[in-house]
Length: 302
Image 1 (cartoon, rainbow, N blue to C red):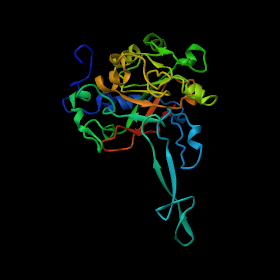
Image 2: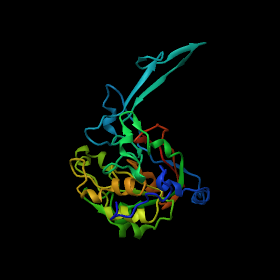
Image 3: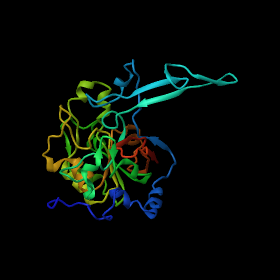
Image 4: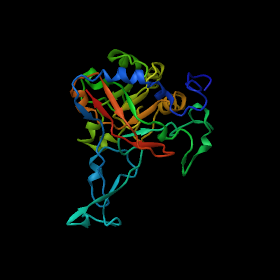
């Protein structure tokens, strides 16, 4: 920690929100001015799951992770297609949904998701992360996020459909597109989800992503959050791991050192097609007490 810039203590010794503290009422009101047409786009992947269906396989996900499970409930307990009677000929169907928060759907990482040594972000004890939940830096501290979004459409900048599998985005390429203001959400398009549509084997061969220096550049510009359509913000190899040394791990740089929440596995194709670099970014994770993350449906208001 001593060798790296960080935000520990910057927002007070008890802080559990990191750079989301930069989203003051004045910053939020200024961000709302980024909307000009009022068009609303969802930036989320669909959650597609069942107990006996190949449907989840049609949505990008990391291999080896439990896929979403979606059950329809009859009479509140019998899991089957149908609906339960409630009188006067009316019937009601209920849902039960089991979703792994990381690697299988659009989600937000909490500040307790990853750490180094014995301390979470801001020096909170890592021992407070237990099987029953994290009592420090859980996803419930996020609240609602309303900010100016800045789209870094990297394939568009380079004239590609998507970045190559081993590509690492450097800070100077981000700077060519835009310099974020404090409190912005940096939204990074790699285009990698479109690969799934032609070959899941190719999708699983690795993923392009930000370099460590690009992450440090975003942190130095005080972004409130970093979002991407890949699975880990940084790049991955064919084993689903980062090749960078531990000191350059983007989760440690952004989550642990700087308190910058990460939003992963977005769908950004319609947003890129709209040709807008700035927009209003809106997201609110589930208030899962002690959660290391939450499924998310981010919105772009153009």
